[in-house]
Image 1: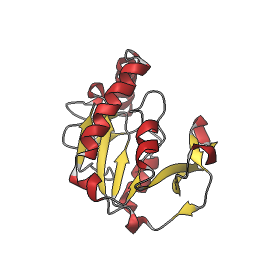
Image 2: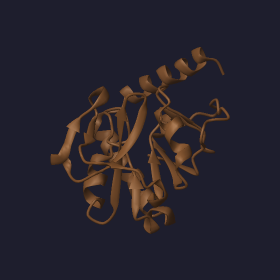
Image 3: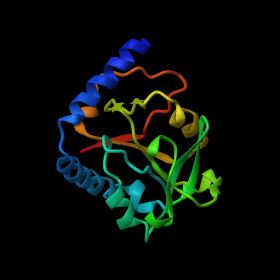
Length: 178
C-alpha cells in the first residue's frame, strides 16, 4: 500500500471520528474499557502500558484514574524520535510534552519484562490485529521491545477491512472496539 493510500485512510478515519461528539466518545470508551476489564489479560496484569488520550482517541483518562490505585500504569513520553515510558503517579505530576500531550514527569521506566499488558492506540485497525498509527513510527519502534500481551483499542469507525501490515509492524493480540 502506498503512502498516499495510507494518508487517505488516515484522512477518512479522522473525518468519521470528527462526527462523534465528545460525550459519545466518552460513553463508548467507557463500554470499551468495561470489555477490556473483563479480559483475562487485564485481570492478571500488574503493570500496564496505556496512553494519555488525545481528543480523537479512545478516552483513557477516567479509566486510568479508576484503576491506577490497583495496577501500575506506564505512559509513553516522546523523546526526540523515540518513545520512553514513565510511571503514572497522578494528574498533578503530568507535564505537557511533545505534540501538546500530557506526560508523566518521573523517572524513565526500563524494565520492559515487567509489563504484562500493552493497551495500544492507533488511527486504524483490522479485526485480526493489524494497526496503522499516525505515521511517526513511535509504537512501531517501541513495541518489539515488549513481551506483553498487546491489545489495540479504537472506535468501530476505525476498523478497516484491510490495512498495510509491513514486516516491521507488530500485530495486536486482539482489538477491542467501542
